[in-house]
Image (tube, rainbow over all chains, first blue to last red; front, side):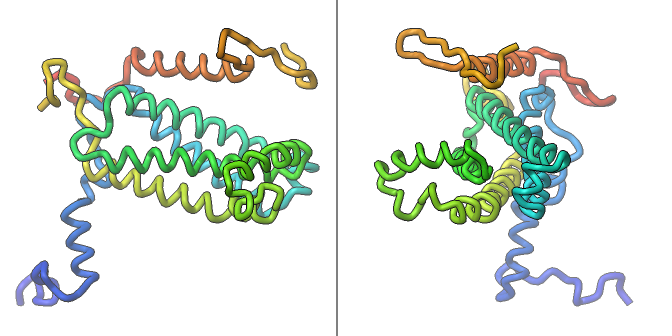
Length: 216
Length: 52
C-alpha cells in the first residue's frame, strides 16, 4: 500500500470544486511562510517598521475595552472606579491607535510604500484611516455626557450643510451608538485584516535605491 | 501644570491657529519618528545585517 492514497492526490487546478480552487489560490498567493514568516529582509531592521504593529496592538486594546464597555453600559463606565478605568483605557488606546497609525503613514509615505504592485495596500490603508475617523467621531457622540451633547449639537449643522444629515443624524444616539459599536468596528477590523494579508502577500517594500530603481 | 477646568492656550501665527495640547502631540510624534529613524534596532543572533 502506498504512503499516499489516491484520495490525497491533488486534483487539477481547473476542478469544478470551488473549495479546491480557493485552497489552491490561497496556496499560490499566500503560502504559510509568507503569512507567518520567521525572518525578514535586512532592511526591515528599523524601528519605523514597528509603527504598524503598535497600531494593531492599540486596536486590540480598543476592541477588548470596547467589548467590556458595551457589555456593562454607561452607568458602569461613568460611576464605578473600574468602569472609569476601562473607559479611560478605551479612550487612550484610541489616542495611541491614531498616533501610531499616522506615524506608520509618515513612514510609508517617505519610503513610497505603494511601489511594486502595492497600490491597493496603500489605498486600503487610506480607507482604514477614513473609517477610523468616523468610528472615533461616533465614539465621541456615544459617551453619554455633556461633551457628547456639545459635539452632537455643533456637528449637526456641518452634517446638514454637507447634505447627509437626513441619514446620518448625529442627534440620534441610537444610530451613532449602533454604528460605533457594530458596523464601523467590524469594518475597521476586516479592512485591517485585509491590509495585513496584502502586506504579507507581497512582503515589505524594498528601500528606494539612490542610484534609481529598487535595490535587488 | 495647566488647570483642567480652564480653556487651553492657543498659538496664532498668521493663518495657523493651534491649541497647546495639539501642538504637544504633533511635536511628540515628530520626536518619536526621528528616534525611530536613528535609534539602533536590536538584531537576533545570526541575522544578516550587511547591506547587500
